[in-house]
Length: 139
Ligand SMILES: [Zn+2]
Image (cartoon, rainbow, N blue to C red; front, side, top):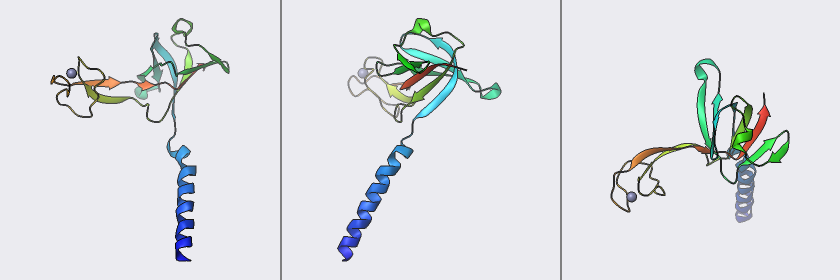
């Protein structure tokens, strides 16, 4: 009897965790205007006054670009500086700072040190957030 009760409790907890997961692993949306755009990145200006800042996002082949409710191909030439947009970043794809080797960019360490492959001193690097979705034509 007690065993069955425990199992029910475990199932309930597992189910609750499953249901709560999408709420915890939430995407982040940044709204702003285009400051700079090229083939692999978009820089946007967000916030007003003192909170105003420029944030860079990497555009990958997985980035979904939307304009007027329709999916379009990413075309840097078609995106104008000053244009309003919203960029969504998936959980885990946020900007981060790591330490890498100038010879081995695939090396990504959380702390300073030496490259495990060649022994060179690792350099700090800022990896921009990866854009999951770019919604163009806002504002
Ligand atoms: Zn190295």
